[in-house]
Image 1 (cartoon, rainbow, N blue to C red):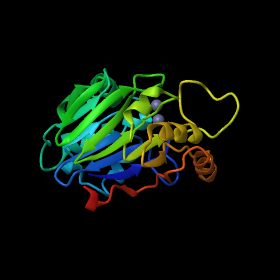
Image 2: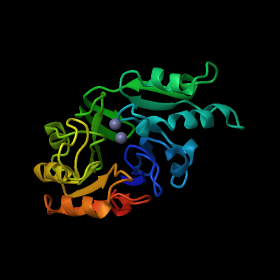
Image 3: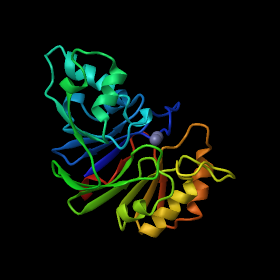
Image 4: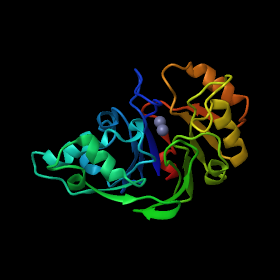
Length: 251
Ligand SMILES: [Zn+2]
Ligand SMILES: [Zn+2]
């Protein structure tokens, strides 16, 4: 299993990255995890759009799902003819929300994608084993533990502090955690993590490596990294476009 950071910018695209998007590739199966603003463009640096086997959406905030609209155009209007539907997994209401955003009654979301509603628990998608849990965010949001060939990746999606993330990430090789906030007074509750809180969750879960993502363009990334390093003694990195987690030799 190889994981490529396609987009790591939190809440809206930044100058150096689209919004959230990660590509999970086992060699014969490719799953896209979230598809935020601008991600369908950057994704093509790492995978043909016709080569994606499944898409998983953590929640329906636009910075995690809105490029599904552009992807539907690729699917429905390709000059070689309509593409086979791609299986999509998302929270309740995914198909209706995307269809309303697309705003067309002909060749829409239902023609491009086969949408399944996610629930907490464990499912198999291709060769991947996915465990989902509800995160602490204002809309229904799933965090994920993705396992393949003895390796485990945990992904926080968007969340405030929650024990559910610690459980999902228990002893994972890598925790890919949002770090939208830097330390400060009067941060909104139940919305996002500071980099320090992400690190505290990583430490409690005993993960091998923490990768900070969903980094917001108005923050200083050096401050986020420094604050996280005070709470987690393991391997710690900032997400960046094209960064690959899990070397091919590990898959
Ligand atoms: Zn977000
Ligand atoms: Zn969100």
